[in-house]
Image 1 (tube, rainbow, N blue to C red):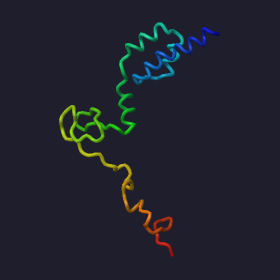
Image 2 (cartoon, rainbow, N blue to C red; image 1 turned 90 degrees about the vertical axis):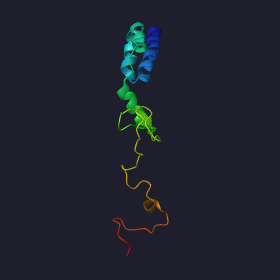
Image 3 (tube, one colour; image 1 turned 60 degrees about the vertical axis):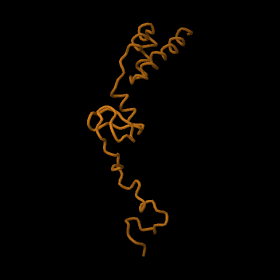
Image 4 (cartoon, rainbow, N blue to C red; image 1 turned 120 degrees about the vertical axis):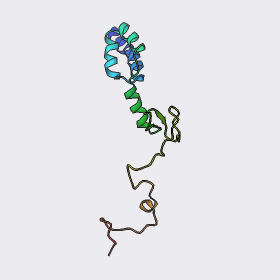
Length: 119
């Protein structure tokens, strides 16, 4: 029983290393719990999964991709630090109502459900 608990806990080490490199935590935990002595060096020498890591960074909203070289840059950047080209400013085109003062104005008179004036 103690060996099983120890294997479960030891399996967390390669799983955490692989997860920080963008790989599946659960699969690496199973691998680490089963054969820890092989899983640890594999996790240490594992190359990062750039697609997954880039997707995680983009999901936070702090970065964007340069439209010219596709490298990740800060959202506020006006010039790409990799290719040196100008980057267009980010817009909120996904939702046209965001930032619209007339839509969120508390002093705006109420209208009906379909935007009609009250009787």
